Image (cartoon, rainbow, N blue to C red; front, side, top):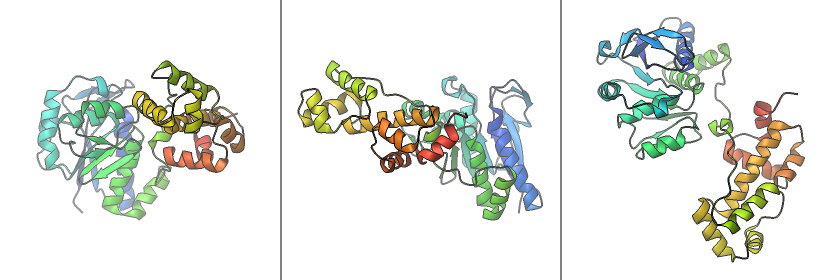
Length: 321
């Protein structure tokens, strides 16, 4: 096979793992392939780059020196402050020109911002870091974000949600180019998940819902947060605030953006996540205290919202005692 040139586009503040992790996956794939298939290079607007951790890098190529039409895969690497950086007109112009000439293109973590500035993501569905999802949606309304995706593939576009998911993206590219066997061998050698269980929402920071809306609704919301195991059927909640069921549903949705039932479920999920992270209570107790009633319901809600079971969640995020 012809050598495939992988170009990592970087800027000052780049996170090393955005480029080093995927590059190691490609290098390991070369080893298992028996001959070099991939050649990874760093391209930037200047030679000397300082990474987010302080290490200095030297770009292999200036953007202006990248040979037109020779790039197989073009990946824009991210930086911790990518969402707040000023628009880099020169980088946007270069990407807009070169991306259509590459066989594949995409972003890793915060690299989605400079790539989205080009307009080339409009009409596409992408992966973005869970902390950047709302920002991407607000700044680029023509772009659809799959909030739970770790890696998203759509045509020639590849996007990876967070820093470590660049490894998942690179592994997916190896699988496309070299097949399942070599991709699995690379995953084993680098001690990676061949297919990571669940989506990225399991890694997201818990956001306890804050009371919102008129005072009667806020009083009800505080009660739910303080006693999540009580009965909060819609009829029961309507009675607590002296409203008709239909009126409560309309006001709750209008003023919080969630139906009463969804608000209760989200609050209970937050409580359950905290109990699983901070203690050793058995699943039956966690389910009861969070208001889910049974382990079966608890498991179903975790699978639906986070893509993992409560046991898997505790194994990954619970405190070590």
